[in-house]
Image (cartoon, rainbow, N blue to C red; front, side, top):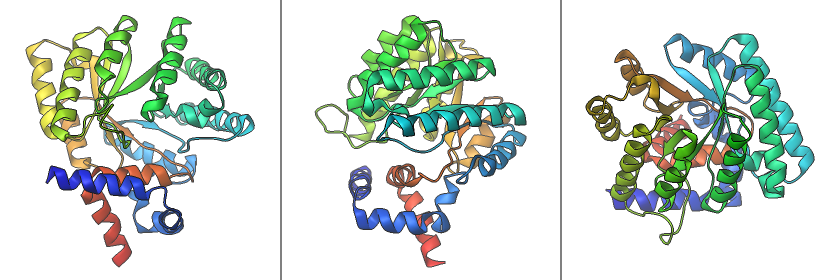
Length: 308
C-alpha cells in the first residue's frame, strides 16, 4: 500500500504543473471541495473560520496563500496584505499567528529582499504581541531560509520560528545547528517531490527521521510544534514527553484545516494545545494539490464533489 501511495503522490505532484490540470482545478476547485482545506478567498471569510475554531478550544495560524512572486513591487504588496492581516487578527482578538513563505516575499528576487520583507512583518507582529512562522519550501531554498531565520534571531527577534522537513537527509543536522537559539520549530514530514539523492523515499524512513528529530527538539529548551496527522507518531511522542518529564507548555500539535478534525478535538480534550493551520486566499491551487498528494482520501473527497 505504501508503494501505491508513493506512486499516487508522485503522479499528483507532477500533474500540478500541467496546464490542463491547473486550468480545470483553478476553475472548479473551490466548488468541488477545495473549500474543505482553504478557509475562503478573503481574510474576512477566513476570520469567521478562525473564530469558530477558537470557540472549540483550538489555536490557529493563517497564511495568505501564494509563492514565487516575480517583482519587488508585488512582494511589497504581499507585505502590506500581511500587515493588514496582523492588524485584523489584533482587532478581532483572535488567538492566531501567521505562517508565510519566503518566496511569497521575494526570496527568488534575492535573499536581502526576502529578509527585509520578513523582518518588517516580524517587527510589526511583535508590536501586536504576535508571532510569525517562516515556512520551509523545496530543498533548494532550505539554506537561504535558515540563513534568514538565523539573521533574524541574531538581531534579537524572538517572535519568529521556522520549519524543518524530516524527509530531507540533512534536516537532523540542521536541527542540531539551530539548538543554540532554543528555537520555536515546526516539524513536518515534507510535501515536496525531492530526489532520492537528498531525501528519504520510504515512508518508514521518513517517519523514523521525524521521531528522531522530534525527540531531539523536545529534549532541548525550545518549543516544538509537532505537525502531523499520524496518530502512531502522536502517541509515541506523548509517551516520550511523559517519560522525560517534558511539560505540555513546551510543545503543541499542529494539523491542517479540514483534516483529522476529530483527532484535533480529542487531543484538546486530553489537555494538549492543538493549532490548526488555516490558510486562505485566491492563490490556493498549489496548496490544494499538495493536500491531494498527501492522502488518497483527500482526492476521493474532491471526486465526490465532482459527482455531485
